[in-house]
Length: 330
Image (cartoon, rainbow, N blue to C red; front, side, top):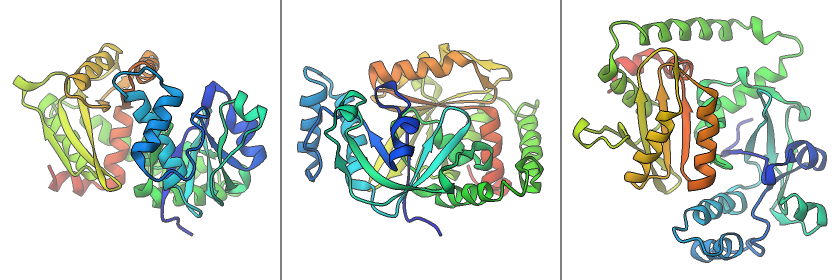
């Protein structure tokens, strides 16, 4: 059993625990922007965005937030279809998996309005409604679940999602900590990370490695920005998103230890200078906790999405895509 399409969907409209309070008990997935009524059935995107803008962001000048809200709702209402799978991340190192089972609807109840969850879709929760541990997932799915967006495409990750579900179904009889493949991948990733930190690697080589990594995970374009033109973005890339291409700015940091939030600010400035709404901060080290907090604040205030990718994720992505890929590309 493998779905044709898959999505990532965060369930926290209005800051509530919608997953526990509404989604699981009522067998639905939910979305916000409840003030934008009458979106269901609107197939013209310009009109769709106009409704979101006038209802939820009156007076907004740059239309960035209304554009984000409209694209999120458009995906939820018009691009999800019956039979598609939806990955719903939770905050305790797990995620849930649902299969869309019907058309979207608008719940006009008082509870729905109070929780900003009027827009809903019926689903069938897989894995008997039980959470799936993130360590069952490969690096691509783990990375995608860290997106700051309310929703994201995961069509390219259907095999990884199915694999995570299969591993979770075996969890009652097999301890995941003892799974041979998992242990082998962890040991291999540690070895790769050690090489990334070694003296052979330097800042320029690490940039080229990240450039190759981007192509391996689906970028249609990944170009290193010459130092003279670097405004905070080291690599400009493009990823296919349905019929469109989404431009992503990447900042690369090669070092050990923690990457601090000054680099998040630096990337945000670079993205604004390049007129980009999505960026990745890729570090060979780890991230200080305030990096995650600042990236969320930047998204809320400016509508700029900054995803963080640390050394462990880089190493695991290299393992998952095959070492030969990184020896022959780039």
